[in-house]
Amino acid sequence: MDLFPVLFEEYDLSGAPGLAEFKEHIKSSGKHDVHSLAVGGVSSHGGWDPLRDPKSEPILIAFQQCVNHYADKVGNFPCVISGSWYNILPHGGFTERHRHESSVISGAFYIDLPDKSGNFYMVSPLQPYMMCVHNIKDAPYNEYQHEAPIKEDHLYLFPSWLEHGSRINMSGEERWTVSFNTSSCDPKTLPSDFVEKVWGKGHED
Ligand SMILES: [Fe+2]
Image (tube, rainbow, N blue to C red; front, side, top):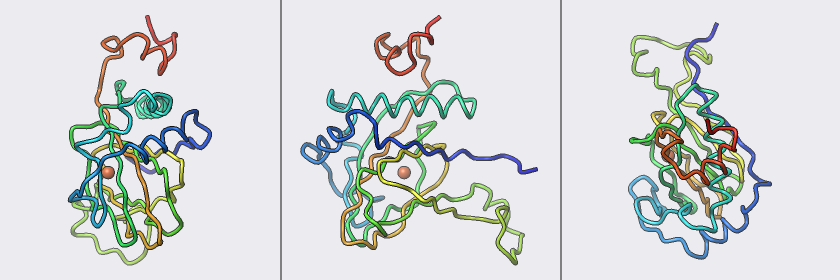
């Protein structure tokens, strides 16, 4: 029996409506600056939000529907996407280990992921409790960091408290990521047309 699983969920959005327009919107209109977590790269975090534009609405809805699925699967109260940003990491760049505070579920979506441009890794929250353990062979129970086989145009959702980062971009091309946070939110407080788009008519009482 394995106890206390953490859900890292993958969603293939390569066929999502509006994906090409979303990428074009970021690449033509995005504004970014240096950021302490995007080492060697740039980020729009705290500034330009790629989902806050009518051109991004189809992708915002696709992301939100994935969040709905994730929240239901883990038994969370409904969450809505509260803000997003993008990072660009050139050759040699990486994302420092971090977690997303003031958020419940977080997402990472890869709009440009060249080969060898840096894996996504997560850090076990159990490591601090295992200070007396002497591991002599690899086992799922003593894994401190896990690297995920991420793919371009796929969305990954995980709990915002889970520490994570990206390995060094060893490719000669840029690695572009869109990330977002969520907040717990009663759908009754949201505009009815938005609720209908992301939860469907059946969600209303
Ligand atoms: Fe992150």
